[in-house]
Length: 596
Image (cartoon, rainbow, N blue to C red; front, side):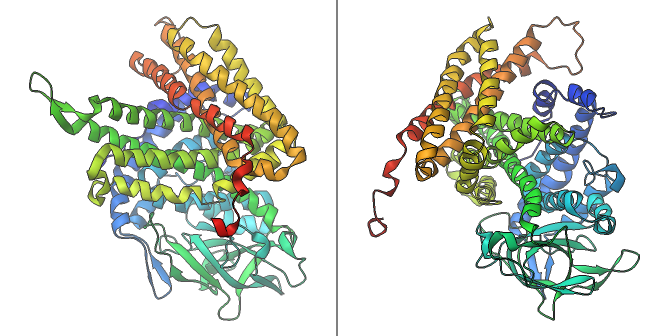
């Protein structure tokens, strides 16, 4: 069984060199926030991830959550692990101090969340949904709702959920049929929601459901959806859980993976109506829910990195230990010495490093936006579908490579490789499929703003190309022409989209997923190149140079090596996707339905 270790050095390198955390903290007067603090936080989080959460991962896969008398019993050991998680203060890491949180930047929370999801994604989904509920209540909840629920959610004493999907309303939220009827100072919620992650459990004394529903006089479609807080237990005047609300789990899904994460069908109002409280204004629930959903989309993208890192670590250890064949001197050959296995290991490692760079880089822009940077808001919106779509798609490849490295043993459940592959499969579906992310990227995030955000990003990449071209480092010189060509291809695509998008939206929809994947590989290549630039500069510095963090020569040389491999192996995919986009994929509808 694989052992998980937090990738501390690479995480700190990204925070230090790419995010420039010390500068960010100084710019926004974030007292006590520094790379040195981040180093301590990641180290301590890594202990809980390795010692407590990771050992439960395989057991939770074998012994998933179960439903007994409409109550979900979580997997063995999870309640104790969750108690350790909140006792150590991890739930409130990024929460506002006025509600009992520690007020640390989102980018630090992202770095830590990677570790939870790598160690045990099924477990980490629970606090992930709570963080999204916190974001929605902070942004849109009344002072009364905030007073009742935020302190307990931020501390982790209670957990939160997101209730959107219904049997006849999947991605099409215009079809939401759940009803909300006014009564006194509250509403009665009636309806059913499906696929509700951690919709019930016994780890906390209360669960706070955020539920989309329609008022009696609501307009049709998405403009008629409101958002409600529906607690599992109603609160006393002192704010403590008392009477069980009319909301219960009536079934659990039997899933391909993440068996320890209960995916519930929730029924509201079987006995007269579940009591709920309106968040914000009537009929604005969908826009409010997107506050929670956008947070969740970047978090799901992060899960793509997390499960890939876990798979990479497992493959690395297996490839070092597994022998096949002998040298001339009779010494056995570890399979990691063979070219194809080495190719797979480099593909996994460089892919993980690129995803980590992008997830933390994008997370830092959320912090900048929260502190009033208008341009950062545009970048966050542009990055979100790429983080969610590209990173989860790449995780399918990397977790599959783990099985391939293991050979036939990877296809056997006992090795644990199959679990990571199965667990990752939901990620391209959660919080909007890859196709939905791609339409968002090409439509709202590119064509609607005349490709302004894209143009700014391409300009940033060009600045990196200029810096690469001026370097005398041989590795950087080998990266330069590949990133240059990728930039040229992306620029051509931008111009094509602006021209063709005005003429035929169907055409741009045809190529939207290729566009998303192209931008993912391009962003990854850009940030890997920036990483190589930083590593080269650090490696050439005099040993007496003042550095807030010390990096070994081996690590710095390794950063350049993985960037070089990424440029050779992954950047050509930018060219491929670009060529597909420029074809327009007009053949997509060349067959009628009966011919398919």
